[in-house]
Structures are given as C-alpha cells and as structure tokens.
Length: 298
Ligand code: UTP
Image (cartoon, rainbow, N blue to C red; front, top):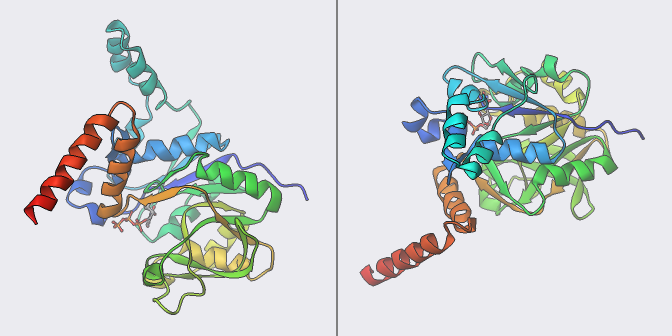
C-alpha cells in the first residue's frame, strides 16, 4: 500500500471563543499566550516537527492579529540586532512564515468545526491532510502530530488522537467506538459526538489532532447539521469508520491541556511556566508560598 506523505495542515481558528469573553472580543483566542508564546505558535511548531510544509488557516472576522503575527517585523528585528539581543531576535525569526507557505481561507459564519475544515477543501485538494486545533496544547517529548504521522505511515486511512477520559466527562468530547484495541492504535468502527455519561461506546475521547483522507471532505459535502446544529467533523469521520480499517484512534504519549477552557488554560500556564528553566525557581517558590498561605488560612 502506497501511503502519501502528509504535508498540509489545516488550523481551524474561526470559532467565536465565547468561553474567554470579554478577552476574545478583540483578541483571537489563538493569540492568547502561554508564558510568552501564543497558542498558535505551539501548534505551528508541532506541525513543522511533523513535516508539514503548507499551513492553511480557516479564519473569520476579527482575526487580523493572527495574520499579522506571522509577518516579518523589520523594525523590531533591526532594533533587536542593534541592541545585540540575539536570543530574542532568534525567537522572533522563528515566528516568520515563508511567503507562500501560509494560506488563509474565510469561514463566513461559525457553522462548526466540520464546516471550518470543509472551507479549506480547495486548498487541500485530493491528498491526506492534518488538522490541528490550537486550543489543544500537548506537552510531549515527541510532538503529538509527529507521533501520529509515524503511526499513520504504517496504517494509512484516517487517524484521530485519543485519550482516556472519566465516564462523567464523555459529554465534552467525540468518543470512539472501538472495533479492536491494538495498544497505542485502536481500530474504530464508529464515533459519537458528546455522548451522555453512561451512553458512550468507550472512554476514548478524540482531541484536536487528526490526519484525514480527502474522502472526509466529500463526506462533509453531504452533511447537514449534526449535534448542536453545527456541522460536525466527527460525523464525517464516523461515516468513514463504517468500512473496517479506515479509521484509527491513536493513544498519544503526552499531556493534553484544554486551553479552550479557563481551567485548562490556567493549568497549562502553571505547567509551562514551571517547565521553563529561566522561570522555574522563582515560580516554584511562589507557588509553594501560595499553597502554604492558603493552608494556613483554612
Ligand atoms: P470550540 O468548540 O472550542 O469553539 O472550537 P470556539 O468558538 O473556539 O470557543 P467557545 O466554545 O465559544 O469558547 C474548536 C475549534 O474549532 C474552531 C475553533 O476556532 C477552535 O479552534 N471552529 C469552531 C471553527 O473554526 N469554526 C467553527 O464554526 C467552530
């Protein structure tokens, strides 16, 4: 079986980000920063590590800060060079995207994640592609998408990142109906979007990393609204899962932070702050002091 390389990635960033209002009234959620890098930068770095060469953003009104973020900034670069701030200059250059490597397509109305991916169909063409949701930030020794690309090169088909969640949490995720559990990879026979606790086919929840075949785009073409009146990506993938061996779940190695929620964003901020050698000591000492003060006040 000849498996085509995955070189294109779609970043759906056209959602309203209502859970972070009022901040998201004027700042795209993806520009919010974990320590000193916006969420989108973590997703771009992960995609680059996985061999992605073309970056497709599905945007909407009010996201111009996101587009500007990837432009070169000659004034800043000159100022940093003059000041001899080489490390900062390097970190700034890492954010630049080559001309032509990045494309933007507009989703006029937030009709759901499936619809957002569908909007990129002309830019994807007839080849496999990755989808990364930037508000899922994954801390991992080997970046999650790279792990998936390596697994996908053995399986082909469609692959979704999956993680075990407690039964009471299934209603927040797309959940896999497992045909065969092969360890890090599971064969999938169906997918259910946001099943109630007790009605989920498994406790394996899909998170925001996918490698998809162009057939999923054709399925999206046919879909009307699914759960919650939105066009669900889950439904288009579930359609593929009806045929055995076409959809795989991948248990990635790493920790996923749901930065689309306030609690998840705060957890990620603490974890990423503590993981930074330049901040660790001061930050850890502060957290220890804070915990002690809270305990004393109880
Ligand atoms: P979310 O479910 O997190 O929705 O979307 P949201 O609008 O970003 O945030 P809340 O729930 O209102 O706080 C998951 C991903 O799908 C994208 C979002 O930008 C996010 O990356 N999305 C969602 C779209 O691009 N278009 C849509 O119509 C819906």
